[in-house]
Every structure is written in structure tokens, then in C-alpha cells.
Length: 90
Image 1 (cartoon, rainbow, N blue to C red):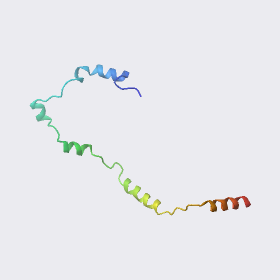
Image 2 (tube, rainbow, N blue to C red):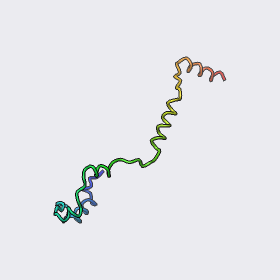
Image 3 (cartoon, rainbow, N blue to C red):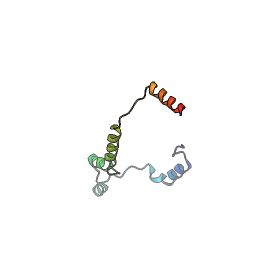
Image 4 (cartoon, rainbow, N blue to C red):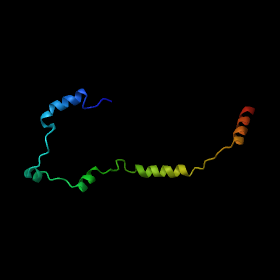
């Protein structure tokens, strides 16, 4: 994948916003009054994960329980041989 900064689109975007790209964030008293800084705790709440699919985790847990209840039979070499023999006799 091509590096975005070196791509044609990236270079066009950098030229378009060259006048403001390297400016510092405004820190005047007026701007801080209008747009106060958010606390880290509030930022964490905004970006915390959420359940996009309600009930999905519960359904996965139910499916896991259902599949774990099934007993697995492990065949030894003898039953495999007997089964092959029965198939060839038909």
C-alpha cells in the first residue's frame, strides 16, 4: 500500500491546507471559555467500546455451551478398519 503522504491525493491535500497545517491550536482565554478542554475521564467515556449488536455475546455463549455438551467419540484404528471392511463387503 502506498504511503498516503507521498501519494498524489496526500500531496494535494497538504498543498490545499498548507497555510493551516502547521499552526498551533488556539489557546486564548476566549477560545478556552467557549470550548473548554474535556477531561480525560469524559474522553474515555466517548471512545469506550460499546455493544453494537445487542444479544450477540449471549448468543455466542449459548452456542458454545451447546457445542461443549456434545460428546466426541474418538475412533481407534480397529473400528476404522472394521468400518472399511464392512464397506468393501457390500
